[in-house]
Length: 351
Ligand code: NAD
Ligand code: DAU
Image (cartoon, rainbow, N blue to C red; front, side):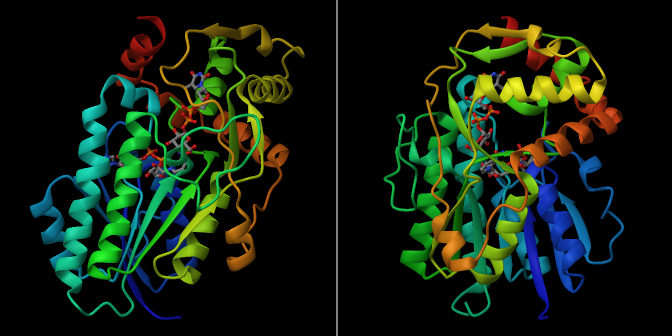
């Protein structure tokens, strides 16, 4: 297997840490540099399994700083980038959009500029792989699926900033021939997810006997994919994807929020040995998210047909394993929910 010199951005976050671990363990002759600003969402505890690997380097830094990014590319002469660093939580984008504009748009252009500058016209074996979201396609009614041809219609500051970055990545491909790939994935769940997102937030609250805040009528629908399967898809696309293409990734696994939370409640009752039905009593309907997208669902037939990828676990297996991970890793959960998490939670759910 050929050597690669890869920059992974956002590798200390939820999905990024799964990608870093997968690449370090599967490809010992790839050099991996993980660049992460370590915002509230970045956590080096997610990477203890690989921190001493000889093919791994961690760099703390900000993709918004163009001079720093240029120097990093100069120093390491990357041949590939897998770009995951982003502000990723929709609710935070509603209360503070500018962070999202800076990191998701300016940060992405800075990386594109640095790649262009260092690669020049020697584009053989080079790749800029941008990780994006299904939210760029907007919202669906009761039926239909997002395909790679669905017109962009982002509706939150988060999804608009991701859509913007997707457009810029494509623009650098069309204008400057930069070799690129983009994938747009549905909602991920699994270990190491920061408990501001629905699933780990509910797991943490059930554990502590706190209310489970359900926005609006609870009938908003998401298509859930196990994070390990997203990391596998990123591996396949990185190695087999066709230059310039976009691939949608999804679990064919749609759940209304309230039904999903019922599954979580029942799984937690079972694993904690609590009385059946006790966690469901914590469910509390709260004020809706502003501009809340009603339904997302991905048509993942292109990646299945062209690259042979499909999810490896059923939702029942994935969710049980996920809940068990949070129960087994109490210290991780306690560490990430101390400090600033408390003030965020207070502001989001009680102010
Ligand atoms: P996350 O919030 O858990 O992690 C983001 C990481 O980026 C953190 O480690 C953070 O420290 C780092 N980061 C943030 N700003 C930075 C900056 N300016 N410079 C350097 N590093 C910075 O996010 P996630 O859920 O793992 O998502 C990763 C990527 O996947 C994002 O691009 C997101 O849009 C995309 N995505 C997420 C999902 C999902 O369900 N979570 C689904 C589809 C696509
Ligand atoms: O679709 C992919 C996207 O999925 C990613 O691009 C985003 O980075 C990721 O955060 C996720 O966005 P969502 O907004 O769908 O995820 P979240 O976990 O925040 O919410 C899932 C659903 O649950 C959504 O309909 C809002 C609802 N919700 C969420 C929270 C945090 C609640 O009802 N109560 C809550 O407290």
